[in-house]
Image (cartoon, rainbow, N blue to C red; front, side, top):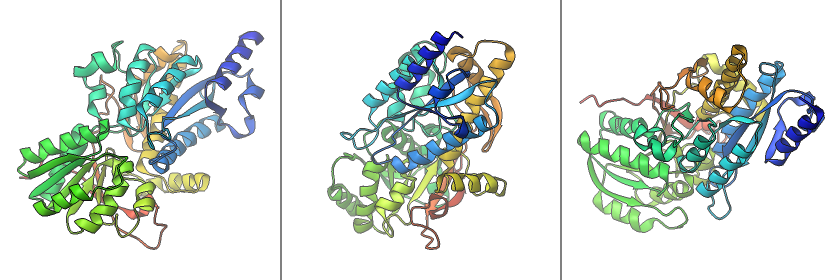
Length: 420
C-alpha cells in the first residue's frame, strides 16, 4: 500500500462516523495508518429509551475487539470500530430512517467489512436492503423479526440474493409461540389480552404469540396497539380490567413498555403480565421501578448463560471492564463479533482477499464454538439453535435495582410445543 493510499484510507475511516482503534496502547488510527486495518461497524440505539440495553450490547462487542487486538490482531489486521447511533431525539428511541442512513455510512466506508447490529427489527428492515446491495454482512445480537430473513421476503430485504442479515439469536417465530406454550403449560393461563407498540418487532412478536395462543386453546379476549409517544394508557387498561383476563401479553420495546408496566401495576395488579426481549434491560428496572415491574415475565431469544459456572471469569472480566453486569445479549454481541473475527481469519488463511464479499461468504459457513454454544446459520442467516429462555422479574434487594443479572430470575427454557 502506497503512503498516498494509506492516507486516503485513514481519512475515510476517520471521516465516516465514530471510529477508533480498540487496542489500548496502540493509539488512534491516525498514528497507526501504516498498519493493516479493518473496520467492523456497530449500529444500535445508543441514546433514548433503550440506551441501557444497547450499552451492554456495545460492551460485548468492544470486549471481543479489545481481546482480539490485545492478542496481536486478526490475521495481521488491527480491528477498528465504527459506531453509529440509530436513536433520534424526535423518535425518543430507535429511528428506522436513521438506521437506513447509518447503513449507507457503513457501505460508503471501504474499510468496513462487516457489522454488528442492529438491535431492533425496525432498524433491520430499513438497513437490510441497503446492506444487501453492497454485499455487506451484519450479525444482529438481538433483532428477532423473522420477516427480514424469511425467503418469502427476499426480494424486499435481500434483493441481491445472498443472505446478509445473520443472527446470534433466534426469531419471533419461536419467541412468541414458545411463550404462549409456557403460559398454557406452566402458568395455566386460560385467557389473554394482547398489546403491541406498533413497531416492526412488537407487531410481529404479538402476531406470533396471538396465533399460537389461539391454536393451543388460550382465549384471546382482544388486541390493541399502544402509541409509544402517548403518556396515558389507562383507557385501554381499564377496558382490559373489565374483561378479567388471566394474562396480558405485550409485544414491544421500552418506550411504551415502561409506561405500560407502571400503569398496569395500578389498574390490573393481579393479572399475569409478560412480554418478549423488549421487556428486558436495566432501563425497565430503573425507569419502571419496583414494585411496578415485579412479577413481569420476559423471554430472550437465546440460551441463558450469564449465570453458568463456566462463565464466571468472563462475567467478572466484563464487570471489571465496564462497571455493569452483562446481559445475555451482551453475550450474543460478543459471540457475533467472534463470528466476524473467525470469518476474517478463515478468509485470510485461504489466501483470498479480505473484503465484504469474502467475509460474508465465510460468515455464512460459520460453525464456531462460542459462549452460548455452537453458532451456525441456515441458508437464510438464521441461527440453527432455537432456544427461548424465560425470566421473571423478582426484586432482590441485595443488588442494585437495575442489575439485570440478578433482578431477572431465570425460570428455564420455554417449550417448543405445548405439553397438552
